Structures are given as C-alpha cells and as structure tokens.
Image 1 (cartoon, protein in one colour):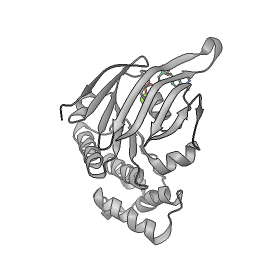
Image 2 (cartoon, protein in one colour; image 1 turned 45 degrees about the horizontal axis):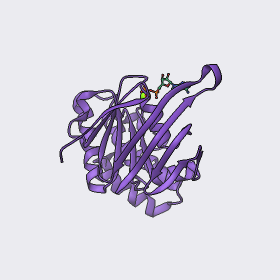
Image 3 (cartoon, helix red, strand yellow; image 1 turned 60 degrees about the vertical axis):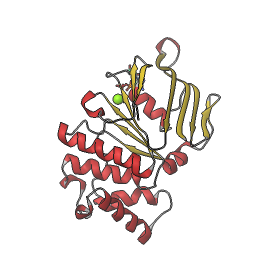
Image 4 (spheres, helix red, strand yellow; image 1 turned 90 degrees about the vertical axis):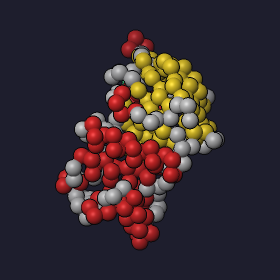
Length: 231
Ligand code: ADP
Ligand code: MG
C-alpha cells in the first residue's frame, strides 16, 4: 500500500516578476517499508519537495495523498496541516534541533506530549525507543554532551515517538563522517523494514544511498530517472 502519493506537484516561490518555479510536474510515490532517496545537486528542489510533503510548505498546484487520505488538492490543504503532520509524520533535520535545556528522554517525550500522550506511559515509550536506538544509557544527558552520531540517534527516536507511517529526513548525515553516516542510513533502513514505515531521505551524497529501494533524482525542480531496486 502507498503511504505517500504525490501527483503533478508544483511549487512557485514569490509572484509576478519575482516568481520562481522550484518544482514542476512532480510525480512521486512511496510504499510501506520502502526506503527512498531524493538525490540532486544543491538548489534542485529537494528541501522544497520534502517541506511540501511534510506540510510545512503549501504547494502551488497538484495533489498529495497520505495513507489513502487526500491532504492537498485543488489548490488548498484538505486537512489541518499542523495536527496532521504531528500525528502522521516523523521529521529528522540536518541539524538535530534537539531542545538544548531538555535531557535526551525529555526531548523524545515532548514530541508525544504535543499529541496528548503524557506521564508514565510516554516515559516508558521514550525509554523503549532510546533502547531501540542504543541511547538508553544517555537518557539523562543534555544534547550538548552528545556526539554527532548520538545526537542523530536521539533525533531519530524523537521522530519515531508517535509511530508515524511516514518518516522524512533532510540530509540527516550531513554533519557526520562517512562511517557514522552509513550507520545512520542502515538504522533508517532497519526502521523502514521493521516498522513498515515509508522513509524518504534527502541527500546529495551518492555514497549514502547503498541498499535504498528507490533513488529519485531531482534536477532544476524536475525528476530525471527513478531507479527501482530489483527486489
Ligand atoms: P535543495 O534543497 O535541493 O538545495 P531547495 O529546495 O532549497 O533546494 O531550493 C530550490 C530552489 O528554490 C533554489 O533555486 C532556491 O534558491 C529556491 N528557493 C528555496 N526557498 C526559497 C524561498 N523561500 N524563496 C524563493 N526561492 C526559494
Ligand atoms: Mg536542501
């Protein structure tokens, strides 16, 4: 089943003489358990597409469906964007954006609290996620004390907090060396398979996309070829 289906997506920044078309004619689908890469040079529209999918940015035209539900169509959002995002999408940024004065566990729990899950139940789930990411021993550390790889593992735990079917990551390995970057990618692949989530990862680094199920190449706001792995 498709977790995400994007049809004819278009995004224009600005208007009049300053209008700039950042995306045009984008068709893009991702299924349960699929690890998909969005690859392309700087300025090709990767972040614009990811931000449209995550409902942070409103598209100009086209259609976005998630889990069979239409979320954007006919030139407008069809769902309350913020709540839909909070409940259905996990997001991992390039910098982690962990909250510096909250410890590791509280950072993970905050994501659940925003969805109304609080107290003991949230803390138990937070610890379970930290164990899954081998970060339980750091639960009381402040983000400033963590290495780059540890920080990204906490950011992944936070993205999983509400058990989203769709996980989006914008250059999640940009601040890591190759070995640690590949480890984070391995982890995201495992998460896609074990949780039957769709995981979309933006990167400009060809070395990071080993073992991905599909590789989608953007150039100047258009898709070039999409490669599907044989399996
Ligand atoms: P990438 O993530 O692939 O580097 P972006 O999606 O950030 O690319 O940007 C795609 C294009 O859209 C670039 O030419 C960029 O300059 C332009 N762009 C991005 N954000 C804005 C904005 N807020 N206003 C105008 N143009 C923008
Ligand atoms: Mg970008």
